[in-house]
Length: 216
Image (cartoon, rainbow, N blue to C red; front, side, top):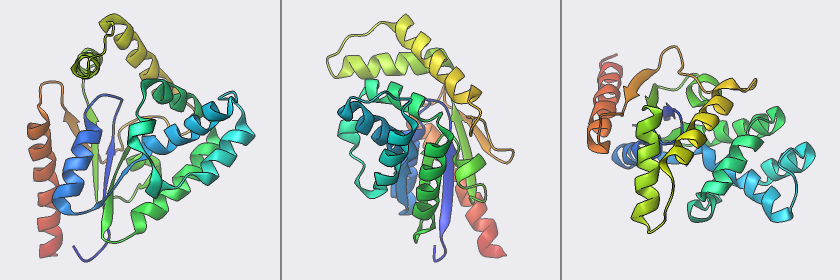
């Protein structure tokens, strides 16, 4: 790939898009950005300062200071930060600041895999490939429960499910950049799919586009 190649992956929390994005970035040797970590970084900054999550000016300042190359997944992946991030993400000016940073990231050679909620619709509407990865709320809740239990934690399935449904409603219902599939996105429902099957399905779609491009 000599030109910049962009793969946009959108979908709700727990659908498996993060794992898929990492696999695809490794396979095609592209840069990788989990855009959700950028919003988590803003939320984390506000939490560290003890500021309310709806403090717009503080959130804007934090967004401007986010360095996409230095997002620490080990710190930012905490569940509480994820919850806080979905509240910060409804602030339109914060989205605008972070979207500009994400677009710059996508332009760097050899290209990138970006995963988030509005990549194919807003951040990279001209992406070479758009995938919308989804799964039923029940399946996503079970995965989250298994994840928590695998590291020795305990959680309640019904509470996780209610949390996921609330988050979906917030992400899909916000006025600025709501979560929805792009009109030209390829839909991948991973409810009955292991990650390997999802990876192979996505790879088939991408290889087909690359083959057609190479013939052109």
